[in-house]
Every structure is written in structure tokens, then in C-alpha cells.
Amino acid sequence: MNSMNESLYSLTWEDLRQWAGSTIMGRGKTYIKNVSDLARTESGGLIAWVAGSEDYATNVEADEDGELDWFCSCPYGLGPCKHAVAVVLAALEQEKAGRNLPLVDKQGDLYLAVFDDPDDDDEFRDEDDPDDQVITVDKVGSSGSGGGKSPAVAGILGKKSREELIVLLLDLAARHPEVKRKILEDDQLRSGRIDTLAIALRKEIKAVTGEPAWNNHWNDEGNRPDYSHIKEQFAALLQEGHDDIVVELGRDLWQRGNEQVEQSDDDGEAAYEIGDCMEIVFQAVKVSSLSRPEQLLWMIDIFLEDQYSISDSCEQFIRNKTYGRKDWAEVAVSLQERLNTMPAPKPDNFSSGYHRKNMMNWLIEALERSGQRKKVIPLLEREADLCQCYERLADTYLQSGNSDKAREWCVKGFQKTVDNASGIAASLQKKLCELARQENKFDLVAAYRAQDFFKNPSPANYLELKKAAETIDCWPAVRTAALSFLESGRRPDMTDAASAGQPWPLPCPEVAARSDKRFRRDTPDLDNLIEIAILEKRFDDVVQLYQVQQKTIRWGIGKGREVAAAVAVTHPDISLAIWKKLADGQIDLVKPKAYEEAAG
Image (cartoon, rainbow, N blue to C red):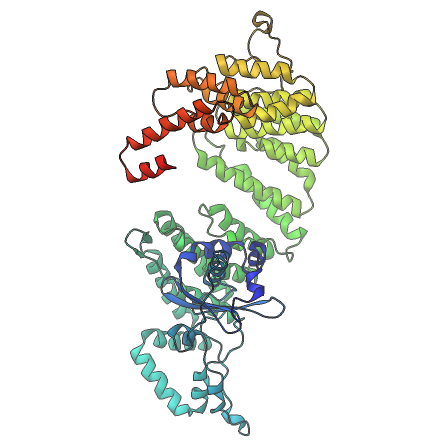
């Protein structure tokens, strides 16, 4: 095969997301730059080194049905890792750029780190001797879906006697502390001495979470706390049935890890590693001695405390169908009690309002999952002013078919937020516009489009206003008023129409944004007047407005480029004069890049 496997080449973003999950996909995307020595295998698979806390050998293959199989020497063991995702994304970039991947060198370190020659295993097999069969060993760090390749070293170990294996392991333990630790920890697990193991692991958690986490891209220096052993031990404890210990240690890791993430500057690496560990903890919670409602509350508490999206990948565990209505009903009672005892948010304290809103959102989910949807709207109405959840309340009313109530809360919410939460107010105003459109109140839709234009004049908003006004056959009058606004700065919907002599043809909308007196626009708004004139192909006006702009402009070139391009056919002399002026301005800068710009 001369190129990458067609199944890999045809992968879409959604294919990869379903394979690895959204969280691992996001992490893998940030690791593309860490991929080196990217090559293809004879089967058209991918192989590369990926730099992390160390260099990891990574291999991704695709079978005839397009199913992906992977191996990575990293310790992640819960599915495809970020390194495997990074290799696929890096390969797709190479393909998109038209660069062919080289065939991997079978004698190189990368190939040997992933593959062993299967022919080597044959010389160690004696099929007639059942006591001398090859030991099957999965690749170190494999996710369990690594293709079933058995390293040649397994055949070597299979030929050794018990005494020889003991001598070998003693030698390895003496020279490699991690081997010694692994032997002792496995013995503690098998013998039930979990307290000793837990004490050591708790100390390790304290030490690792106490390390500074930082990364300096300029000099490629930094410190990445290594959570791999903690993750391995969590997985081993869980596999041996010590789920309560994992839950207890997981809580300790969570509390200390959050403090580390808060002080870190490492592009989220520490958060990712802690999140990986917490996935194992969440698995332990689901099989722990906690009752099912207690399990739900334990996990909800983690999400409520999470300010850095560390536990995003764990949401799959809490929304598992194994939790029934009765479980969620008990959770709803507990969350309602907590919400009732929470102090009202302070106006100048974003954090208190944020935490209350999160608590309310989880209570709503518990009510919905326990079949108590009728309690959701009363809850949202009680919390509307405290949590500023007007938009969700309006949406809930719309889902129940009550558009009048939805409109009522949009108006009330707008009035409550227009001065101190402009983003919420803008969303509510947009929702009112959408309600008017759904009810065929097109004059009201045009009125809201006019508000958008007066607040943020731009060609795009001008076109939206035009589209809405043409629907009700009043565009000429609206257009005249809109251009007059750009000339004078006076809003036609807020002035005395009779005295102005230009009656405003649109109705007064249900809500109106107040003008921000802190920001005063220059009038006339020549930039927008020029762009709209270009849009409407009024090239004589374009030239006239540009000449006015050149007399008043204090710095810069104004709309010179746009004007020169627009009037090249109708006013070629003026267009050439503008281009010459722009080129002279670049040449005067006396910089190589400016000369290149001038030449263009």
C-alpha cells in the first residue's frame, strides 16, 4: 500500500468524536504539534511519536470495515487516548496538504516500540508441551483494543523457569524503582493490605497536586505533574473491588487538584490529567456502597464545584439509564432543600449567582428525570430574579405552548437586565423578535431589526432591516430614515416625527434598548455611509462621501481601498489616484513589508 488507509483518510470529525469522545478529541487537537516522525505502516496505518510528559509511541490502524484499532505506550487505559487522536489529525493535515507519508523504518526505534516480529515467537513455541506455551502479554499501555499483537519478549519469558523469572525480577526491581513499587503494590492488593496502599497513594496525591504546573512555549520549558501512577492505582483498586477506597481517594484528589489547576499555567494539562483520574473515580462511585441517590448527589457535587471543566468527560456516568425516577426524586428533594438554604446572590458578586443558577439547573434536571415537569415552571418563576433565568423560563413556556407567558417574561426580564446584564437583555429582545416572526407580526419584526441597526449600524444590519421592511412594503421610508440617522445621529424612532417631517412607519416594539451615552458616535457616520453606497451601487455618492471623509479624517486611509475597488469602472481616474496615494503611503514607511504591499 502506497498511502494511508482509505478508511483513515475518509474519517470525519464526527467519526473521530464518536470513536474517542468529545473531551479526548479536544485534547488530541491540542497535541497535533507534538506529533513527530509521522509515517505509515505497510497496512496503511499510522505510526508516530507524540510528545507528552515523555515521548509516546502511537499506532492507529483501520480494518476492512473501517473500525479503528490503536496502541499507545502512554498509561491511559480507558479508550482511545489524546495521542492517538493527535496522530490521526496530523495525518489528515498531511493528506490535505498533498504530502505523502513515508513508510516506517522497520529497524527504527519507533517501529520496535510498537511492533515485534511475530515470526520471532515461533522459535519459542512447543505446541506439544502445554507447560511451555507462549505467555500472552498485551502491549504496555494498550487500551485493550491494541490489535492483539504479542511481543516477542513474551516467548522469551515463556521459556524461563520459575527460578530464572524470580532472579530476573529481583534484578529489575533493584535497578528500576518503579518495578519494585509495582511488585509491592500488586502484593498489597492480592493480600488485602489496602490500608497501606491507600496511605501511600494519599501521600502521592498530596505530592503530585502540590507541584507547580506550568509551561513556557517560548523556551519549551515547564513542569507537568505526572498523574499516571495515581491513575493506574485507581484502576487497579477498582478492578480488585475496592471501589469505596477509590471514591474516598478520588474526593481527596479532587479537592487538592482543583487548587493546583487554579494556580496552573500549563494549557490545561493538569486539568486533563485530573479529569482522566476522575473518570475512574466516577466508575467507582457507580459500584460503591453508596445508595443510588447518594451516588447521584456525589457526582452532582463534583459538577457543582467544577469551575474549570475538569469533569466534563464524566457527565456520561451521571446520565446513565441505570438511575430511575425514584432515585432522581430523592435527589430533587435534597437539591431543593439546598437551594432553599442558599443566600440570595449579591448584585456585585457573580460567583454567588453562578453557583445558585447551577444548583437550580441540576434541580430542574432531577425534576424532569423524576417525572415532575409540572414543578419546573414554578421553580423558574421563583428563581427568575435571583438567577436571571428569564430566557430559560420563556423557552419552557414556549415548549408548553404558552407564547403569551413567554412574551410576558421576556419583557419583564429585559426590563430587569437592560442596565446591568446587556447580554441577557439582547437575547430576550432577539427572542421577542422571533416570537413576532412566528406570529406573522412582520411590522414588529421590522421594528426590532431597526433597533439592531440603530444600536449597531453596519451594512449587515442594514440588509436585515431592508429585508424586514420590504416584507411590509415600507422600505423607502425606512431607508430614508436609516440614512438620515447615519448623517445626523438622531434616531427616527425616538424623535418627534411630526416636527421632523418624516413620520416613522414602524410600530414601537415591546422593549427598547436605552442608548449608551458613554459611547458617542461621530456624525456623519461616513464609514457606514460609504459602505452602504457601495452596496447599493451609488458610485457618484461613494466618490462624494469619500472626498468628504478625506477632508475630515485625522489618521489612517479611511475607506480608500474599498472605494478604489468599487469605482474602478465608473470613475477610473479617481480609482487610480486613490491607489497611487495608498502606494505612496506604504513607500513612505521605508519597510520591506510596506514595499511589498505598495507593489501589490
